[in-house]
Length: 189
Image (cartoon, rainbow, N blue to C red; front, side, top):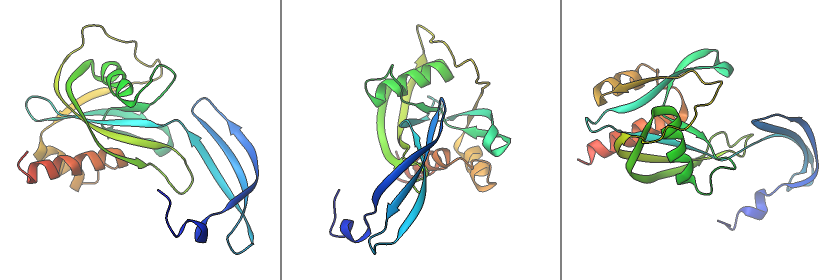
């Protein structure tokens, strides 16, 4: 959405050099002209768009994945998530694929919660968060990613609250999913 402030803050890219091109991200260094005419450098990480899923069981428990995350050098608790790729024509395809691959479940009901940039200061990744309910086992299991080691954990709201307050739900998408769940509960839904 354009606004009256766009021109006041817009930077013009005058060059962009690729620094790295990997299987998940591409990194460039941009030289930009600031609105006041000065030049500056910007490191930019390009990443495919992604989805995250607040999957709630029939017992009103949140499904979390326990897995190792190399960048932070620790085991984390996260909601199911994944990047959109060539197999997906729509974000809902990604939701269904990731639920199948990671939880072996499919959702009878999926609704969009919100979309957001994951690290807007340096990356273009846009994530859409979904709520998935009416979960049942899949009929046909898709292959899981070879390099993922995931343990599934289900937590009730009280345990999720304890984890959140203890700083153990420190992944952004998972914290947002928990807060949305809390909002639903406060609204009596």
